[in-house]
Image (cartoon, rainbow, N blue to C red; front, side, top):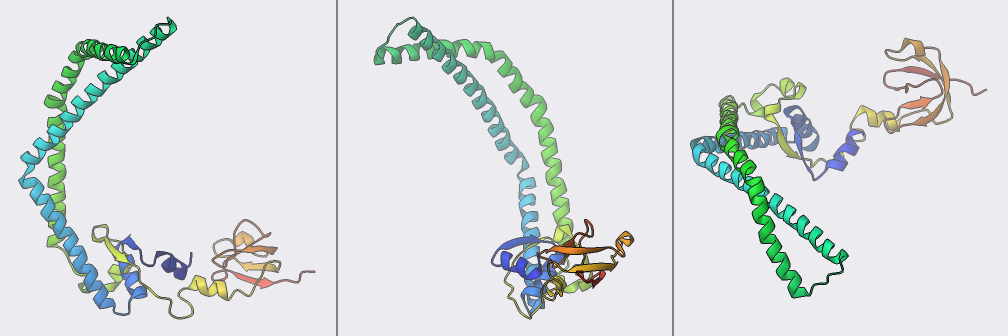
Length: 273
């Protein structure tokens, strides 16, 4: 996809980009590069500062936060145990009612409701006893082994995040103070930012691909000879007919599987005779 088409597709959308792409969008989308870079710097600084504040708060209130996480985990475990019992009870009641139906025993609505209530109590008591020991064992394991280990992992994760964002905030360098070459030629993950594409189409050509596409002197059906194909010496001297031209202006034809790129390859037109 050429640059003009990319910006047209992305216009008005927010996209996540690295510092290299942020600089690229600034060049394309706004004449006032310094103003845009300053905005991006402030936005990025606010993002990592907010992350640091959030992580610091979590660490300062770690025990309280962890107690709530433990309570939620145990509640989900107990709820899961309860649902297992309910599923078994429903299944047994279904089978019991099916047996009555096969025997030709018909129940009135009130009788059926009363029977279901009675069976629910009986089966619930049965399965509580049957699954109770295993459930209690799992709960003890959760409280004494699994959760303490998870607590340690969670604390380590928070500490790492705190150290990471502390370092980022301390060493933060605004885009305007960085060397343009470094910003443009490298993707710095920790400096990822969100930008909104607001570019407009100016000038006839935005990139080489668009120029090649619109200034292609060849058409489908033309016969060509490959004088030189970049990094593919075996294609030199081959002839073939152009079968189609893709959206990038590259030529595909009967000379082989590789496309001819006008910007890098040398070709000449042949007689169709």
